[in-house]
Image 1 (cartoon, rainbow, N blue to C red):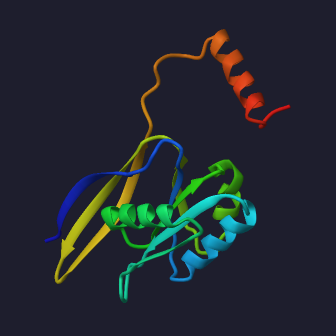
Image 2: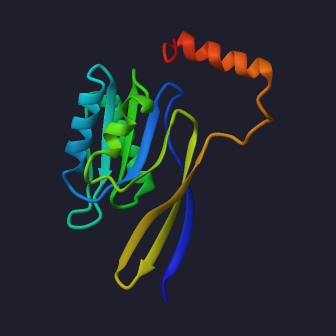
Amino acid sequence: MVELRLECVDIDKTDEVNIILGQTHFIKSVEDLYEAMKTAVPVGKFAVAFNEASGACKVRCEGNDAQLQKLATKNQLAIGAGHTFLIMMRDCYPVNVLNAIKNVPEVCSVFCATANPVKVIVAEAHYGQGVGRGILGVIDGSVPKGVETADDITWRKTFLRQIGYKL
């Protein structure tokens, strides 16, 4: 019989940090994800943490910002799910890098890409002599507070132009 336990893990981050959380399958993922980030946004600050699922089962972390590396490693230890990666970034946004990340050959899926508060739903299974953890899904941000009004549409369009994403 397999014992199963569910846990909700909060991603520890500040408001200005964006994240991409996903699943991958190979030890070289940490280097390939680093290269994808650096190529897509050379001036962005980021860290990539990857949890191995076999062998040494280490958290592997690379990046160009020591603070983000420490934070990404801390969060990946808390999540504890094998073959997952967490990218934490500043001075760039997921929209700038998401296609590059999804095109890394080892990447299986992306759970979320956001600046919102995130809770990761993790399942832990105890079987025989082993323990495994996997991500079931994420809670990204808050529930809707209504339907967009004409004023909200104006605000959205103005905001996108202010930050340079629309003409």
